[in-house]
Length: 116
Image 1 (cartoon, rainbow, N blue to C red):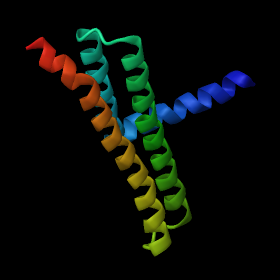
Image 2: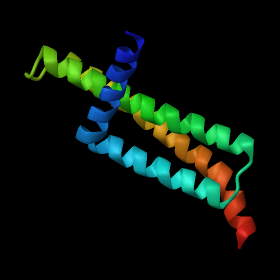
Image 3: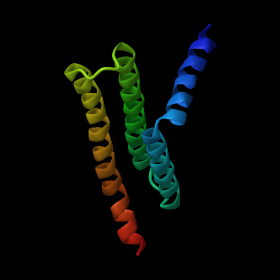
Image 4: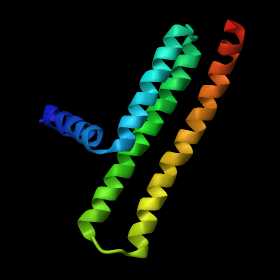
């Protein structure tokens, strides 16, 4: 029974990756960041911070997708509250992505400057 819950959660991730363009963009960005982290031989602390912000952005994108699907299930018609729910969830992803970009700049810029 416990494995079924895990598989259901995994299925949700797979569906989001297959059907959501923004999820693909976030995963590509995460791959690039992990590759750069390996190339620049980041410290354990830097790796931990990067992994946390990557997980935050991807998790919020999954939540945003869930909110959008739930709202679409309730109504296909325009409703200001439905729009607000979708916009707020998307805003959470945007905040996390911007902060992740700032964190990435803070971590990577010294390594890039010292490399050249």
